[in-house]
Length: 115
Image (cartoon, rainbow, N blue to C red; front, side):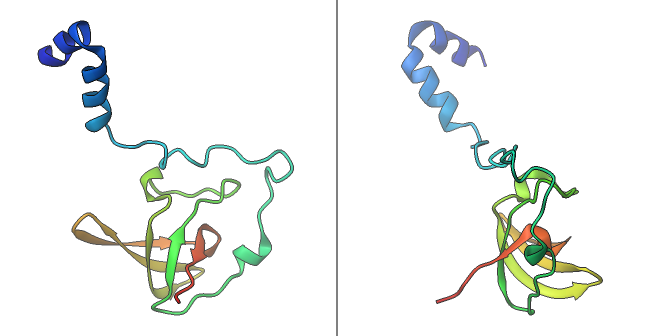
């Protein structure tokens, strides 16, 4: 920490470079904070009732008018549908080297088309 403070006084460009190098990108995490005024409080019924099959690739996109209930770092991640449990889908998402499973409502999922 002392080295960074000395760098801040001596060479501000190097200090800024190192600070950006070791900082996690938060722009992706906090990308969805607000909705447009016309769509605030509303959600798409088409997305609410969409169906997926096991093996489908999906992306997690938070719907801001519905409570998400998971950490913000899940926003933008992709995974595969494993099964349906109740009204939610079990999605398998790789977090670094560990595979994790989340139960996510279909309104927060978007299907990724495979070519």
